[in-house]
Image (tube, rainbow over all chains, first blue to last red; front, side):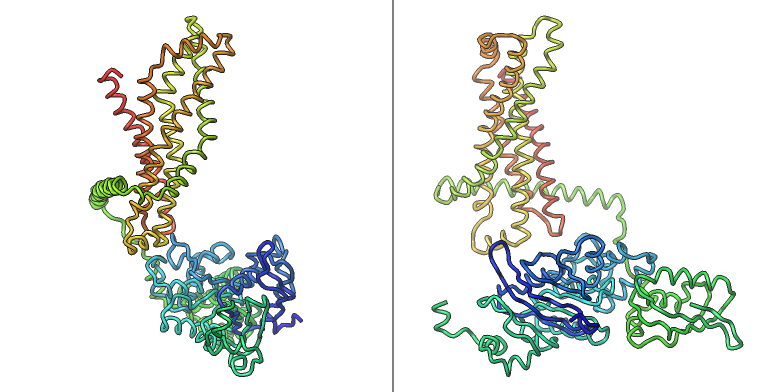
Length: 259
Length: 368
């Protein structure tokens, strides 16, 4: 199904490196305008799935469809046009250290639009304003805190108004207040601007604060074990691993000893 | 897009998509249309804009601010609520003017003063580093088990054994090139056999040590700077310090020792390869091997070989030390590790030439 209410369709995806399979048989959809969270324990393959979904790594098998077009194997202009449909904020922000924030956000506009310089400048400032960093526009990334760098990373990812944003571990390494501020920004981007957000995280508080729906991966079974609203998964999931994750319970003592 | 003038004033009607693809063309069309009329005020009917994004809204923002037609006051209405939100994200005009303020250019005296202080600080840091290195060496001599022999062996293999191929190639070719270049002028005087003497002296006393040192600076000095620089950026050096371990004793001394041992060995090999290049050319000119060997033995003494090897020991220690010094003093920023590697190579080459000059003067004075 690739109707207008579906932003991304993932079909029978298997991911891994060489002979090692990390996740397999992944099939799910991301609806337009929702905040979709990919979660799971450390090392379960969340970030690997993200890398496959944004075309950085080829899957072992399967398809990733944007508006019905498969990103896997797409080349040349077709791939470029698919890449324009989404923006990515990396875990560290991945800002270019030799450029100011304004120049960082303006870079995609400089490279991919025919707008005049003043207009590109305006759009970049608007994006920085959206993430609350207008006053820091002339500062270098090294002068910013981790939370500000991530906000600036979001602004740069949004520069070309891609419609879909991928955020890799937005709360990692942030204090609770900064993390909550980032959660609020994510909800605002979704509700006010209709952006579809795919967020990789394992921070429970963030998941409950931002997620419309979520997908849970499991490292042992090497596949998805749950999909749905976080509160429903916490209260109603028949799978003990899912309930354990959402209730933040430690692994049972005997399993830890044998595992 | 259409502009009509009526009794109630001029109305500019916009319709369709106003996004990143169409924004530039829309701006050109609006500017061209407004230029055909003399207007001071215009109503902008944006209700026909079906979809848009921030790039498209930048055109409306400029229109509303009177930036597309001088002196024109534009009233915008009918914009869809989601696009209103995008437009509202644009900052006030005074905020736009305030950004992109680069640091002011400093005056020449301030620049010169800053550079002088920088040199002074560098000198102080170098002395401190040399002191730390000496202390670490003393500590190793009194407690040899602290040397971390496996790290020393790893560095020695990477910077010494793995450099054999490149040193072979460069030295052999240099020997060949010099012999060929000298053959023609010496032929004029019937003195081609002296190519063997010349190659022997040049390779053993000068080119062997210098070329090996330059290869060592390019391969290993830069690698030491980059390796330690990356460790500093990743806070691995800080981790060592907080564990009570001195990075100089833990990481630097092994590299300096490996350099001091690997360099004379590589240099001896380079001397042999360079001479081999010269011998090949001399043989091609028809001189018998016995005669070539006789000439070499007459030209070269043990003191020449020891002189070249002594230089190599100093070059090895200095190049490795400079690489490590630049590495542990790496600053912050994305280009910092690259800058450290560059500085290590440039400083090493400069020091190689300076030390070589000092050796030459001493050799002349002492008659070596």
